Image 1 (cartoon, helix red, strand yellow):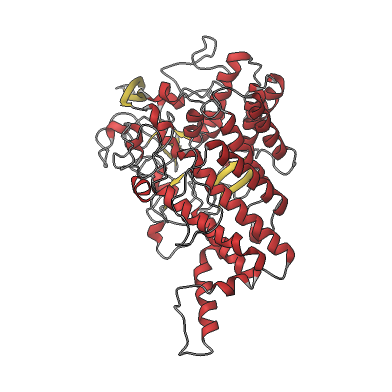
Image 2 (cartoon, helix red, strand yellow):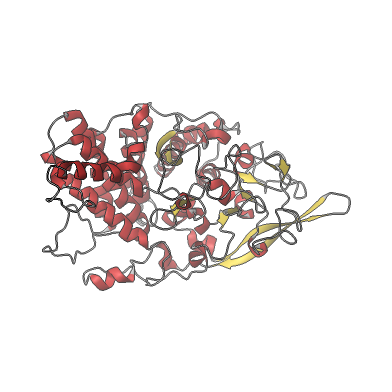
Length: 546
């Protein structure tokens, strides 16, 4: 996968070499000769490699600036951005418009890559030579195009399905397809990709799309399509399709849960990873180190780094006690003045809290502590401090320094636990509670949490909580609360933070307080299509409310 980031250099070398025969007959050296690409599958592979470059982590800032701070979960009830200039606050305050969407470039970025994939697929039949290589190249291009549509559809709803590279002579005023049409297209394309892609790759090619990745995306889009927002009539057939698709990933018998949840995100390409962004050094190397700001520098406690993606008290409260009881259960043994004892092990793996360890030092999120509001608040963000910082994704073995790009692990985009939970959700909706419990308890057992035997409405509540705890700060919660159509109930009002005071005797007092109110108008279940796109295309209908 290193080839992905040297593709332009290789292309330039090919063009230069082909032109050297006549120095007076040179074409532009910054344009790749199309005949060169489609005459050699190994060069076409480099073209496909470049398509992977647009795959983002939890989100991104700018077209080629990879980071962790604009985590999608900052738009949910799990985390707070932490710095007022972050894009998430446009969403948090309900200020999203067609004229102002900080993430609106998703539309143009993904359509640009879809066009590149279309060019590849329009010319794929010209490729001659290694049939296995040609087969996988086509599979990768089909997968990536469908994946880009998956990303668009999740945020914008139905979008124009453009499956061939357009020319200026074509009718460019393309109408939107419906959500169901788009979902079907993604499913059908992932089926095609499944037939063409391998189960796995050798070490030199790890990170490329596989059968498992294609089936997993298919499973997720079908789960989205079956959920309340997209399936208001609760059509059981849609839930069955979602169950079948996610079970197909399980039945591959390729993936398993990584035994150590805390290390899962730091061990590259482990057995739980289905698809990830090849972010680990030296795979993502750019011309300027400023294009990469390591997740360590963004996430670790303020005074050590910038301290972004700050877990809310609402999120912290989701973590059960080690006995499997919610902290609100009278028999849980929860002590509000000693709140971080005997919690779900995923709490300690996910969150820096007052008294936890960061690089061998005690974290101080109390008022006037080195990582808390007050005296040492070097960025003036005390009002955004929640009492917590993100521990998940942080690798303390590398420096917490600005512009350090030697990240040791990739960003996981789809992992096996997510598929197990997807399948469990579909089985709950189909009334197969015992089957669902089997898979939920597999996820719980990995971290030593006791099995649950919840049923009915209690099972739905527990499942949704389990999903937030397991996948928190990985960007899924934002999509979950929208597809379940519960975002309005969660995000119209304040979330909560923990204010901690250090007493004279060295003990601490803990006080849960409200933060600034969030706002989620109903129109924000979908994002607005960028206004420039509406102006350019008379047939492009805007989402309701914008």
